[in-house]
Amino acid sequence: MEFAHPPAQRPDADASLDLLLDLLVEAAGLVHHVTGGHPYRATQLADAAWLRTEPGGSGEAAWAEAFREVRRNIAPGLEMLFSTFSHAEQVVLRALAISPSSTHC
Picture 1 (tube, rainbow, N blue to C red):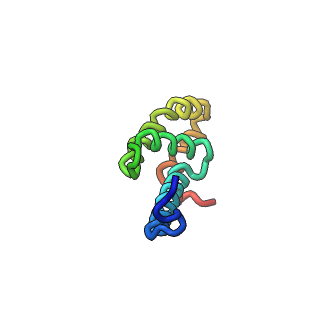
Picture 2 (tube, rainbow, N blue to C red):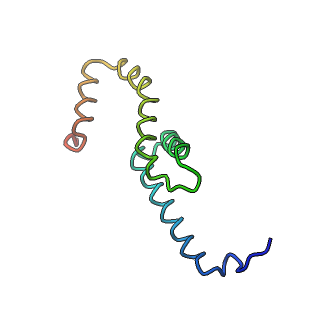
Picture 3 (tube, rainbow, N blue to C red):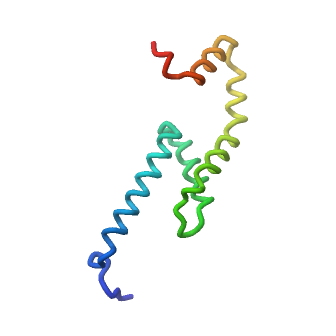
């Protein structure tokens, strides 16, 4: 296959690459922010968003539903884990969930 302009010489190639890199950085930042960098949760969220993105689409609309799906999928396991903690531990975890920044030690 022969290009009219080789990829490196196409006038729009640099702009397209810059746009693609910006989108990837933005998506990676969102995944890291939401998952706290947890590798398994990051994979779950990215996969759920990818599955909801139409071919050629930006995926922006997919994030909200992807996040809801991941939360639904992990909720039963988290509920079971939470139920194993003592009452005092549950109280502390609830306090941290409500106001994590006001509990610095």
